[in-house]
Each structure stands twice: as C-alpha cells, then as structure tokens.
Image 1 (spheres, rainbow, N blue to C red):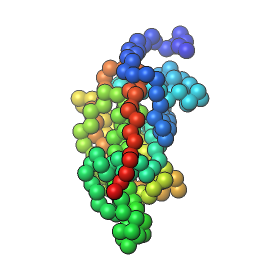
Image 2: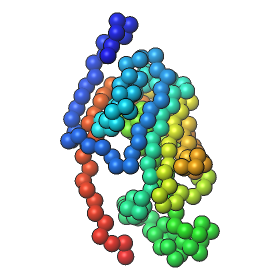
Image 3: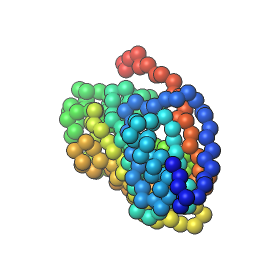
Image 4: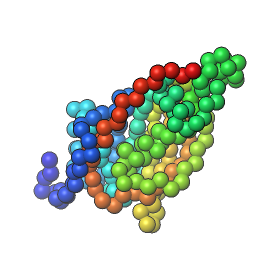
Length: 209
C-alpha cells in the first residue's frame, strides 16, 4: 500500500472484541490529507463495507478544512432506550396521544439524541478513539421524528495549542434540512491506533407501559 514517497508508520492494532458492525451506522470520512495511506485505508473500508474497525486521526494528521460524516436513523427502540438511559420521559417523546396535541403533532426525538450523534462522530470517526470531549455548543433548528435519518458533518475549523481542535458541527436530516448546529472543542489523540469495535450486548425491550 505504501510507496517510496510514503514513510513507514507503525499502527498499533488492539482487539477489544469479536468483529462486529453497528446496525444503522454509516461512517464516511472525507479528508484532504497529505498522507495518502490514510485515504487509501478509508477508501478500502468503504468499498468493502468493512465497518468493524475504528481508526483515529491524530492531532498532527488533522488539518483545517478536513471533514467527516456519521449517519444514523432513529428507531422506536432507540427513542425508548434513550428515554430509559437519560431519565427524560417527557410524554412528547413517548405518548402518541399527548404528542398529537403538541405543537409538533406527533412524537419527536429527544434533542440530546441528535447531540449524542455529534459525540459519536467525534469519538469514532474524526478524530476518533482517544479523543477527549471538552466543550460543545448546540442550536436546535427543527424537530427530529421517528425514522428520520440524521447525518453529522464535522469540519475542522482550527487547531490550537496543547492538541486542542475546534470543529464545526452540523446535523441534517434525510431532506438535507439542518436540525442541529454548533461547535465542539476536543483534545485530539496523539497516538495512532486502529481498534476493533467492541461487541455490544443485545438489548430487548419488553414493554413501554
């Protein structure tokens, strides 16, 4: 994969669980990198649909204008699980009759479910594993409804000392309408790694009443 113009780079590979892929996830990274091998690795993952590994980008590998995306759809199970984990049981999220009388006319997702996708994008795509979340601003533009598909778009705005990086964050739905915008500040990793995605336990919802 490497040619004589590329320097050798050691990548530490750790296995944290059996090969697995997250249902409903699409991870796409578009980076204008000088190091061609990174682009080649990511391209291979896309072409072969191999989504069982997590590859990070170190502080030195990030450049202003670099972009990445992360996509996920809102299912009934995810909405209920988010309510259970967060403790936010606002009936506008869970009760169809109550939600029908609201300004939205139907059930909607928790605003922070959309926000959590930004966290997932930063943690798993760019910069990826090893990222430390420091700050996040969020502006909610429109409601997210069941079966909506959201895409998080990250753009490197600037790099700061001590491995700090500022990202522009935009979340759009399947109609390309913005639902959330904001900025994130993170500490980017300094060590290059590729990790197997941990295997998540299967969760069954028996009832919502």
